[in-house]
Length: 264
Length: 263
Image 1 (cartoon, rainbow over the protein chains, first blue to last red):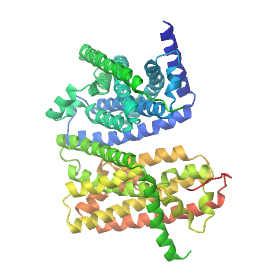
Image 2: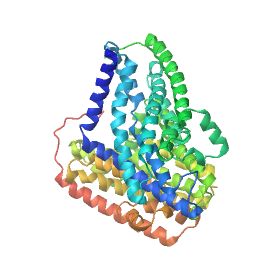
Image 3: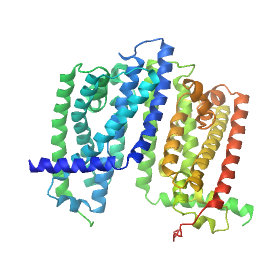
Image 4: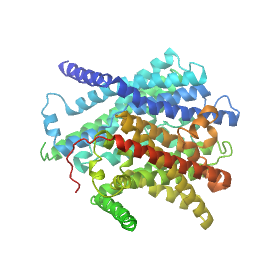
């Protein structure tokens, strides 16, 4: 219970540090607005050219809201590799390990504290852009609830995967390249840019096997098609989470014993 | 310093900046490779898109590949070899121009060429690679490709210079410059016909990405002399304005009294 209270305090402190600079956070959303304007232009043209009311099971406002949902997730996630790489390179990890809180749990708490306020802000800005552009409210309260609930395991999955990759810093000193390549895989196979329902069959099969779509596509689709196949989504997220958490703990134990701290 | 001396100095300065980055060959190669992969992911997105919708307003996958080849090369050359350009507003804001202003060389090319941005060199690798691999290179097409790259680079360079020199007048312009730059890059990498109405006007004036994303069709696929002349005139005008604003801004520059050593 004390451990949970500590983690909550860490998450809360980092969430407050995000809100402490509202101007800077607002400026960060400019890119989100730009990319949604571009997506609006692209998909509006596509729907008109194809003379279609629905593509991949989504109408134009739903497609844009889906993309607002995927962008909100991706733009909210912290750079684990940079942080852990820095700790390993500078020797700061030696100080972190002496704290009366698990290093990994601390990283999860920091990430949660930073991600949630940004997710809510990005989603609000993204949805406002979609509403202004299409004149409709494509998201319901049920959709919002389904999205936010599914985001919890999605966030934990994302954090577990990228923390696992970041831990390769223990051996490589810099996990930036590995994490960068994985984030690019999430962009395509996670459905950040195009929903999986529009994938060619072969690529769809590959994307379905991997957990990447459970981090982005799954929650974002819930935003526009709430509670459809929900139990399956949550179950798949939890199973992958168990697997990745196991791998993370295994690598962490191996890594800490292999670690040589040079200073700090 | 004579003009001939200067023209000998600039390539040497650029080579020295490049050698400084090559001191860490592993990190250098990895960063370049990562940017090539990043650009490749965007091309994969377009492959996915066009596999489902083969033609959009007359644009095919090949045109978007050309857009990425031209855009990546132009943006990569400007930001890669003018490595201080994306940091210019910060240098102005922090009063770090002193070192360039105190030497008997033109300050702007000196400060721009003093740093190589390795990530952008990935774009310089990616663009020509796409041209050779996907765009049926012939000698005349190579000429058109190079023409498009030069025009796009001139527009992008002048726009970035104008944007960052705002720091002379606004003080803190770095965040704004970063956000507008990324907007310019984003708009430059999507097919031009999808942007209509007021947005289209914006893209041919205040945020001139429209010139860049029209080039695959109007320079490479079906060369349009009218468009090429307009783009060239716009590029020259924008450069003249940017250099004028730079000179005016420089008079307002205040030193940060910062001691620096250039090693």
